[in-house]
Length: 219
Image (cartoon, rainbow, N blue to C red; front, side):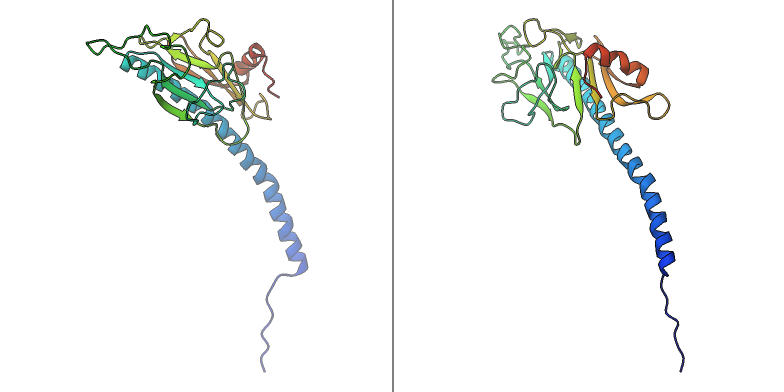
């Protein structure tokens, strides 16, 4: 009678295998979480830059004021702006800040009281409503809106909100503004020029003075 040898792991082999798996998870899980956080914060900053570019483009194309603002509930039936940009966690709306009135030649009338007032009024069309990205992001800005005139340049709106278009928007999470690879920061800043163009700042040395200027509680 032949006997088939039993196959399997010994207790020692099982323990060694579990140890190896534990070591791999110890290195892999934190790296994966870091990768997810970096992707989320970069995506939020890039999303804002894309929104600003779209607002500027629409203002020039339609020859009307177009505004983008931080909003705590961008998909609401009547969305509202967050004047300081705080608490919105990155959500924003983009709309034609003009009620659609035109003269006999079809040229927009831009003298109505609600035109260009950085508030979504009756008759104004919301072009884009972007919800906050997943995860927890701290968002700080020197203003809660970016407004553009028909010439495509950033415009300030005195007497409404803080009275000026945003110049710097800071995104950070619980990691704060610390270096990861080289001098690349865990935080991001979207800098908006007077011409309406935006760029994402990624280096610690670039972001540090913005954090100080905004008085941001970015850990």
